[in-house]
Structures are given as C-alpha cells and as structure tokens.
Amino acid sequence: MGLFTACGPKMPNYNYSKEPNPKESEYVIGVCDQLSINVWKNDQLSTSVVVRPDGTVTMPLVGDLTAKDKTPSELRKEIAKRLAEYVKLDSSEITVAVDQANSYQFTVSGEVTRAGIVRSPSYMTVAEAIAQAGGFTTFADRDNIILSRRNKKGKIRRIPIVYKFIEDGSHPEMNLVMISGDSLHVP
Image 1 (cartoon, rainbow, N blue to C red):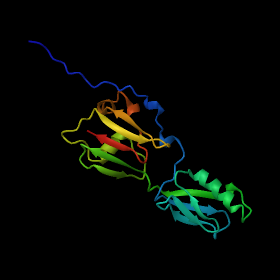
Image 2: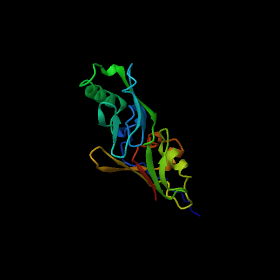
Image 3: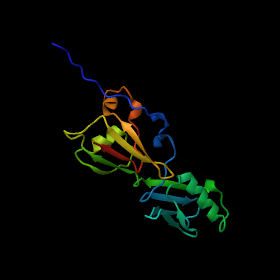
C-alpha cells in the first residue's frame, strides 16, 4: 500500500517587498475625506471641508483647490502659495488635518461571504480584508487569490496571494496592507 502526500502551494515568484505600505508614508487625501484647514490667528480663512467628487475643496479667499491625491503637507504648501497673493503668511501658520478618512475603500470579490466594497477608518491587511468580508465560502480557492492594484499611471498589476502562507505565518510579507482602490479577488 503506497503513501500519498499532498503537495502544498508553491511560493509565487513575486517581490512583495516592492509594494508600498501606506502606514509608512503620509496619508494621501481622497474624495469624501473631511479636512480642517486652519490659518493661525485668522478665523475667517479657517474652514472645515469635505473633498468633493471632483477632488476639490473650496476655501475662503482662495476658492477651489485640488486636494485629491495630495498629502496634507502638499495641500498646506499649495494653500500658503495661493494665500500669499492676499495675506502675508508662511506655510507654518497653516495646518491641514484629516478629521475623517472617508476615502479609504477597496473591493473584495469572489468566494467570500460578503463580497463588496469595504470601507474602513484605518488601514487593513489582506487577512483583515477577508475577515471583514465574512471569510471564505466553502468553495474558495484560498491559495490563488489575486490582489489587483493600479499604479499612478493607471496600469494594473496582479499580485498573487497564497492565504496558507499568511495563515501559517511562513510568509508575513504576503499579508500586504490594502491601498484605497485595490481589488482583492478570491476565486
């Protein structure tokens, strides 16, 4: 009588370390985020705004500014530049705070209990995203998950995820932090 051994999943040939981790960089503002813009000692210029669907916010005296895809620091510098036409300020007298990060969302589809758009006030990993979607269905192929991620030029790359390696802790680098706009598909 012969013994049969099951072959486990193979490690994909992918460099997971090249993937960005949003936890290690400044937050990038998105549509629906709520911001507080404060100009020191100038209440008339300070405002609380929500980033509109077109990616802009409106500020007193300055008018419309593009906020989407900028960090709070970048937006602060832009505001200082625009306000300099009217008021003597430097950028250290302006603060841009993200009061509510409403734009952080991604999609989980396929063989999960609750497929759909996942929104969260904090960053999630692949494992947390699957848990948030209710976990796997009976028919899920846990070891052939694809994370689709778009770069700044619009090109989509497909990142292979083998859940067994996340689950057993042998490859924690595969448990990537989800980025807004990502799509996680469980076949």
